[in-house]
Figure (cartoon, rainbow, N blue to C red):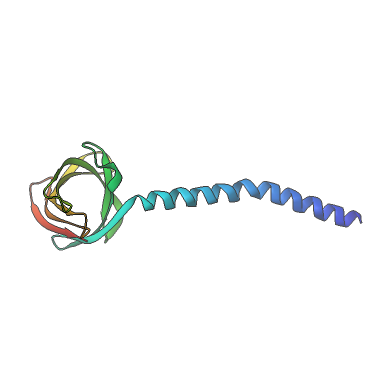
Length: 140
């Protein structure tokens, strides 16, 4: 009987000590899922380079950070995107969108200038890097 009580005590202590960790993991997963749900994922190329871009469609206000992107070959090197300009082109959802690219250190390193299609879910135009070199881009 004493052995059974000891076992139950250890079991209760284990459950009580693990419960907060399990709840924290569940909340972290939920927060990550909610964040991912706010972004639209676009893939394509800037010139010959494959990229993945994530845009938050609910935060299109001038100066706001509206997403990020990375080169597929270098997924840990993430560039933040801030909205410079967004102007409706027509009533069907076409917009002229200009985004500035920033490094992880906050240095402006390039500009996307193109047309964003809400209904077709693509963004295409010209990317200009910090050295002035231009590349065509298309992301879907």
